[in-house]
Image (tube, rainbow, N blue to C red; front, side):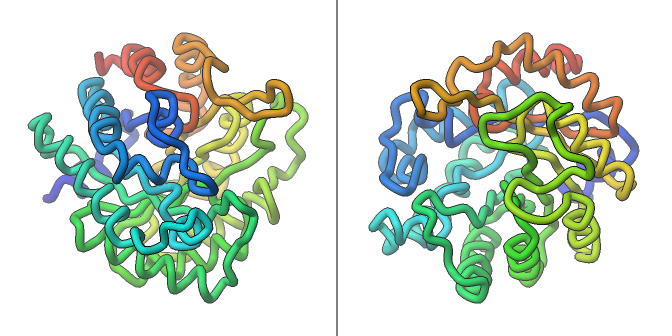
Length: 306
């Protein structure tokens, strides 16, 4: 068995698996320059040592999967940021940095995921056909650079989820799908509608049914969703899917009209949510924006990894 088969078999029988926390927001917290309309996407070329250090920190905690810092390196994002010529280099280099961190740590068993999103920081989203072609290109670069799987990040509506799934399925790698629910700044769980909607269009139940029609999909996740909502999302997945489920939440708040992920939740408070996620059916636990190595250290301790 290869490294991917070994991990996914453990996940399928209910073994608890620690993955990494945030990379993009952690790059900015550590001083990487913010790319206009491109968030942390510039860190790969401008601050590669920061990206490498973040991967290394998660590996030291026992993370068994680390994701490339590519949430903000879709072609449409880099076009909006005025650096479209760096598309191939950014995506390839991001994968190489994650693999380099794994090699330095002597952690050959760890998976490197190619993170793929269809988000836009400018609000100027491409047509579905353009998105499909761009995503095929991005996924192919990542496959050729050596990722073990493709991780779809922040799937917020049904049409772009469908297009992204069709695109990444064409390159032949295992797929993990990350659904996002609830508003960016979060809300109490009792304020989340029933049935649970995706953040920007359609129901989570329909998104799950769509995802599981793709034979390469191995894991369904609730990600980049408020910590208070994640248990409900995991429960909704478990009602329709008997495969592995991941949970990697974020914590955000608005201050003076600006959204921030920094210092929103303590490591101890974040880790305190994870038992409920396990009970709801998740076997794979990580963190998203605002959830850094200190948070994941607390989670690792609760899981008995550290």
